[in-house]
Image 1 (spheres, rainbow, N blue to C red):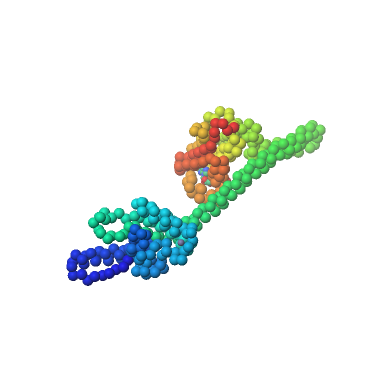
Image 2: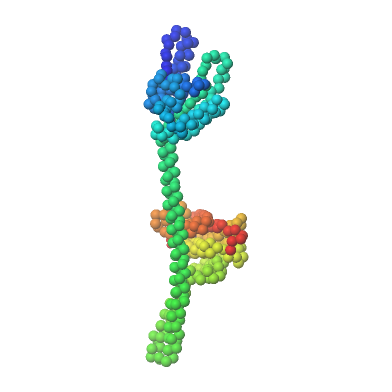
Amino acid sequence: MSIYPSESSNPLLAQIDQAKLEWETTVDALPQIVCLMNKGGYILRANRAVERWGYGRVQEVIGRALHELMHPRCNDPDCALNVFWCKAWSAVMAGQPAEAEIDDVQSNRCLYMQVNPLRHVRQTELNGLNSFAAVIVHDVTERKRVEQERERLLVEVRADREQLQALSRRMLHVQEEERRSIARELHDDIGQDLTAVKINLQTAEPLAQAALAYIEDSIRIVERTLQQIRNLSLELRPSMLDDLGLIPALRWYTNRAAQRAGLEIEFLNHLGDIRLPPEIETTCFRVVQAALTNTIKHAQAKHVSICLRRNNGEVSLIIRDDGVGFDVNAARQAALAGASLGILSMEERVSLVGGRINIESTLGHGTEIRALFPHSESSP
Ligand SMILES: Nc1ncnc2c1ncn2[C@@H]1O[C@H](COP(=O)(O)OP(=O)(O)OP(=O)(O)O)[C@@H](O)[C@H]1O
Ligand SMILES: [Mg+2]
Ligand SMILES: [Zn+2]
């Protein structure tokens, strides 16, 4: 703003000069352009930002219209700045403020413009006071660029994440299919062949006295292998899960785990004998399998409870052990660094079927895994 220092000997005038100087210095220091407009839409005063923005000296811009100042030689009928200005000016004439963000192609800047009508408390007393509205122009190019960059990165990350999820889903599906077919092959083909060998050996037994010891040993080996194959097949993917459903499969699996590990496992099913969508049944089964394996491997627990129930359109699966507990965050960090797969794949599986999972563990007090799955009453 123009400064006209006057060496007044009148102390009151000197005070006014001082206040005016302070105020002008303050406004000049602002990075935004600040203009005072008269009722005709012409600049009465402007701060020194107009000089820094390259619009000419402060004295030269007085009396110019804003659009003409910022866009000399602009005759674009759709000029965004001009369109905004016309709209803003009608608003101001009606006593309303106006503001907008404008992509100014001419200056290659992104501008945030505010136009505010001035309300003079003592307008009627101050004859000749011409000021009518204040305009503030901010340069938000950099902020806008950062925002756009952030938006672009977000879109990219989202797309990557979706792609990864699709890949995981596909991978899990293929894995289950593969397990199903290996389990079936082990059970049906290899198992049947071995059973045939066993019958042959048993038939030959009375005929071959000299080779009796070998034959008896072979029968034992075949029996053991058959048992191993049966276990492997069940562990890979119990056919029960497809044929009878989650509840019988879990009942069988937990009984077996309890016997083998000498654990007390309580299975509480409050779902009745309903069938859930196949991908949710598989996920529940795999979560229990991973959780029980962890309990047996790490927890030194005596008692485990597994509970399935339904409430508020969700199926909840809760697995609780009374073992040593662990630091869940530390384990997850280690897993992300490649130390293990169990917990991560549990979380991934649950989220892929639209569920949520929470693991809580207290050292010395055991672990609780809580998984929630969406389930409408009408779904199978
Ligand atoms: N129920 C539990 N009780 C105590 N510690 C546990 C329990 N479950 C997990 N942990 C701890 O969390 C760690 C991570 O578990 P996670 O299942 O991811 O890996 P893991 O069992 O070691 O290996 P894997 O990849 O074969 O599952 C375990 O190494 C163990 O220290
Ligand atoms: Mg594990
Ligand atoms: Zn223009």
